[in-house]
Length: 145
Image 1 (cartoon, rainbow, N blue to C red):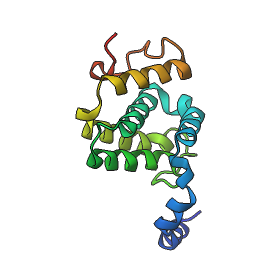
Image 2: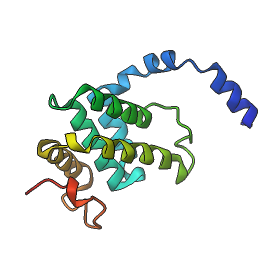
Image 3: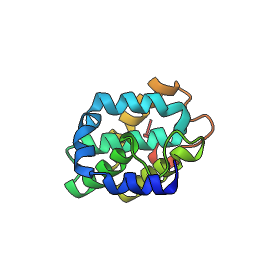
Image 4: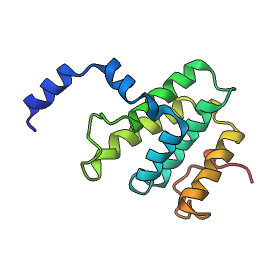
């Protein structure tokens, strides 16, 4: 596909229709299914941070403004259109990871102990008990044990 083809495709893109078309991906089951599918590819850190955002989004304590940031980041992760397509090896998920990390640090004050614990428990189910054996997860995001 040439650059002109991409420009044409972008010009024809109707964001509202695309969001409506993929709205079901915002469900918990669809999000977790996609995350599980790509967890090994995107790695421990991006998966954990995505889960932090997901559980912070679900928390009634998280304010709407933070939830909008989270929805944008998780939407970018799960919806099929990206700046850099996911099928491109290595760099395909780099933009997704950057968006996720940016969002985490923007809503950090809303990532409480309950959110950390929920993400930790899900990570154990995905990667096993020793998912952080290489120390990828920042200490501030680890749940108190």
